Length: 110
Length: 119
Image 1 (spheres, rainbow over the protein chains, first blue to last red):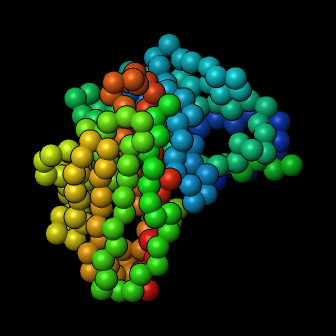
Image 2 (spheres, rainbow over the protein chains, first blue to last red):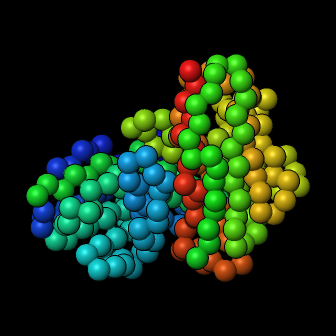
């Protein structure tokens, strides 16, 4: 079983739609959680951290359920510029390295 | 915020030759640098963790004699792909975190990546 698993995608949604991604992690010692965005042939860039209390940044909302070891990302009012691959990333307590999910490819259509 | 500069952006080399990739932390000291590899349509896979002044720690299945890592200073880490073969063609990315300025939730800063093609 992969340590971090994501919806395989791809997701193709019209502009303005709301889209949600899910992610599960297997290591209960995981401590920090992130969503990264990666554009084609580019490096990943931090989109937002994820907290147990849930957090929102503009049109983006992230949720963490530690009991279920489940992370989600919600994008409202999607824009064409949101087209990218979204990576669920986990960091384990005591370790510095990041573990990446395979990513979910999102395409927003006009 | 923290910046990591990675060079070259892309390189094409002949099979059997060696290629060096550099990553520099521009405005912070990177005690630890991480090296990842990403094949098309796959996620980033950690290859090794580079520590300044000591030997790198390699992930299972990564050949340390093939992927030489040198972390010569607090701002420079290099990855050398030795005797490259076409199956080594991939996107190589380094990453580090500014432990002094960044909180845990700031994540890590990535270099811009190096696209290696071995012909």
